[in-house]
Image 1: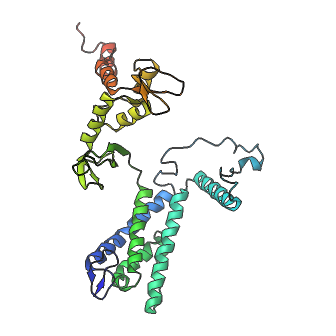
Image 2: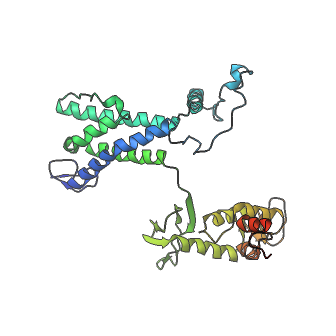
Image 3: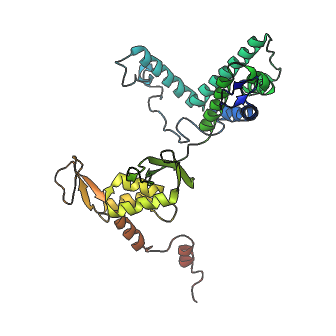
Length: 337
């Protein structure tokens, strides 16, 4: 009786248990579809670049008037440590820039090639171990790179389970899927929810583990105390702390941006209130970490209270009509005659 190399469960005469074998087979069945999405991302069909969807400004040094040396990418800042690595990094940056000019995502292209090589390697290992020859499908050129190997591994999933490298193969396949999903989908905004508030009776203190979760998450699980917390409740708890103890402006903006709709204000509104002195400091943080009411040196950081933000938000009034109401007023629609 052997153990599954993926989950350590009992696996008679194989290196993957039945449950893990079905899981990997399901991942391999989905992998060709995700590889097609990765091809779209790599070739610019998904309108995603290495800049996360933002369109970069046109380079001023590519106007045809300056010498070629002016268009060469600079060495990285750490070029003094290893010149060979610096040259490789510059060549990689130059290639990425050239590909981006043709709407090609360099990172997605590299990932696509790496996955194709990895799946090709495992197919070769299994074929060599069984003394068979892999025959490419005539339709392989019409599919995304790596799709034919993923399909072959799914069809021969029992051979994968019987391979002594089954655990490594399963790990690589799952990692490939995670990497593709991360490359294809836009990254989700992460909320920083402060420290875990779970009370520990043995140590007479809270858990204190830093918590974070995606913006659309309802609950977050703390690995330190194995407890789940409501995300909105943690955010509102941070607001209460900000009302009691003023925070630096950047921290105040971060908490405001994480709040559910209806609780916060636009970040530019916060900055406008600070620039116009509508939002004034309630204290100062000194370089030694101590807090004070008055400013003692130019290095002191101003602290702002969320209670003042809430007061300004509640007192905010729309001075003139906008949108549909303004249009009706200007056109005389709905007015008495």
